Amino acid sequence: MKKYFITGLLVWVPFGITLWVLNLTIGTMDKTLLLLPETWHPDRLLGIHIPGWGIILTLLIVGLTGVLVRNVLGQQLLHLWEATLQHIPFVNSIYKGVKQVSDTLLSGSGNSFRKVLLVRYPHPQAWSLAFQTSVPGEVIGKFDEEYVAVFIPTTPSPVNGFYFFVRRADTIELDMTVDTALRSIVSMGVAADTSETGKHPTYTPNPLIP
Image (cartoon, rainbow, N blue to C red):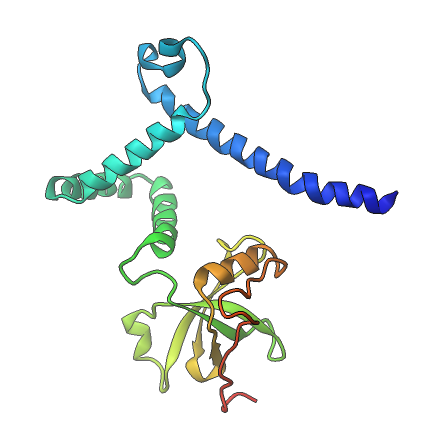
């Protein structure tokens, strides 16, 4: 009886969580309809409630914002907005922190994660997945040999973690995409993807590392 119950859970738990996440996402995005005048609400115009209109409005707002910021006027408005936020105590700290994280994860200008590495953490006998990031120019000149900046995310929440400078000779570069590494971290290794190479991810051992 126990094995049938577990089998049922394996079917319904992922399905239920997926529905819950979708319902939460759609419900949250539908709140953007509050930005519209009440007479423009789809529920009022159609006479029935159809969930999901907020997703369309959110996509339109995000897309139009991207188009606006891409031109000179939009850039000036963005700089004015950010300058205003910088003069608001507490709000400034939150905005700057969130913006730095979003720029790192979403930007295609070279500030995003570059490579997936293995680094020794949390002790010399253990290895952890890490993402290579950018080393500030002022820091580079402080080392006698080549160092790289790495972000070591925590499991199962990869938005938290640790930022270190480590010797490149003490790292192992993996033949793994950032997306695959993130999936592995979020799932605590359960959803490790080996389909990219048809076998387990491989790496070239560094002869300098014992």
